[in-house]
Length: 439
Image (cartoon, rainbow, N blue to C red; front, side, top):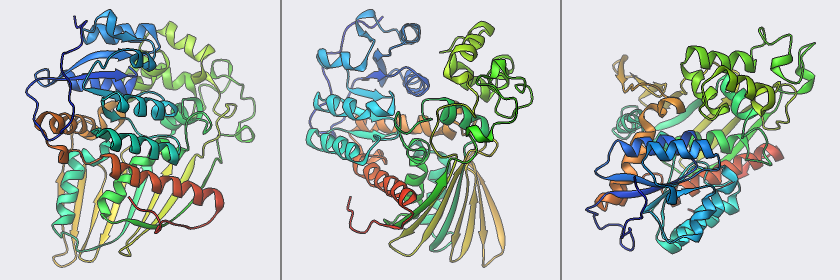
């Protein structure tokens, strides 16, 4: 059992290779923190988890047992690390969005390298402050824009940069959040209220905006956006609906029934089990699910919650070279892969996060490329993006190759600025000019 910190840490020149395993402290042992820890455990010769900070005792202890972490390196709060000498090379920050600023700045100042879950922070000023801390400390910061790292994106960019469709003229991109995913996370869950988390666009789709910018490969010049909360409101509630699904006479017929979603996940597994595990903190029993539905936030009626984030939004982008992009995120879909069409001067690409169809105008032929892995949802590792991100980050530090991190400080800050500009555009009903901003 690991109950002592290693004697040396990364410092100074990040281009110098390291001939020992990198050590990781996981801040937040929820779904995302656990995913990165499990992936690190797959490469024990180059990485090991040595500390965890998690407020839920049973979750913390289960995580620590799984990763062989001793009692001295199990913390209730990430701030507890500030009272100790540096414990690891890397801090993986997978805590609530509102805490990203304080954690990233403090740990960067202590000399930790940072793998930071998206979004970077909940305000533009906070993102700027994190970037400033990374710069002054020489921190190797990677934001978890996992879409940049998937085999699908790698192949797509290879085709585009190779001129497969000529010059990109426009792009359409859809984020189909999925009706029960949206109800779980953005009506009942941690991201339901902007004052407690962030905007929907930032929380859910900052990496879609980042991905679009990466694919087109130019700076955004202007942005507009429209969207609102139209359905998950009291006035949309069907007659007879009660405040909680367990007492509602409509629970077996409502599309957004919490009793249906979480009991289905418990009994039948599949993707829905991922959400069931979240509401019960991993305890997959009928009793735990019933308790969560009866007393917890995830048992509330979607029409009688305290949510305020939009349930649909569109963002329009104009790039410096003249290309345009339109992005739609919506609650009202099945839980499925993102859909993209890219229109070029010599052809068209259609993609779904796994398959790429290339249509060539000259030959009038279609070519299919299959980059499929097991799945594209968070529960399934984002189509290989989670693992590819972690491997790229660890390999960059281990091998002294910082260029492997393609979602670093400046790149991530730049795309976050576009997200904040889109929200300003949505709220003001104006087109926001970004030409005055620089990386």
